[in-house]
Image 1 (tube, rainbow, N blue to C red):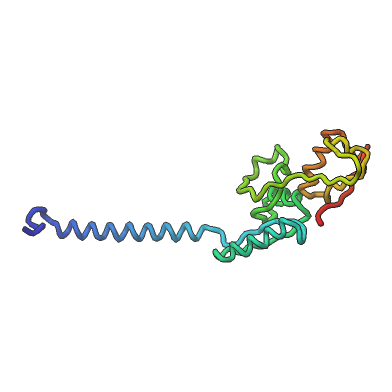
Image 2 (spheres, rainbow, N blue to C red):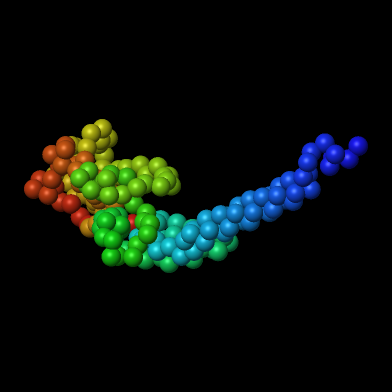
Length: 179
């Protein structure tokens, strides 16, 4: 027996169901289009000095994101301190930046969101001398390369040295870093 004999107005119900299905598909397609349209296609990334690791990372990210239609505008900077300042300044135009953890002051951390960790960045100590050093305070009265001003490594190393009483008053802290 045909369905029409069991369910009154079956044709009308099928028509309504078909229209509802078409409307749902259209709404889903509109939602997908809207979400895709809100994804930024251009980001400004603060990196670091030319040929340093963050500059190289920025170039690699630009290459990878270009495959997905995202343009990366790299803004080379003096280092992590400048990157942090640019992120904290809403007028800077910088969307994302590379920097070491611990660079941003605790009082300002609630104004930033960390998206990812790229890699571990150990603190290396290279020493030229006959004696084996086992503690940071044994660097006192020495000449120590601590990195360029504003460099993330320097922002981390200086407090470590100061905590062990290695200071500019008793040691020569030289602004050298990189290659």
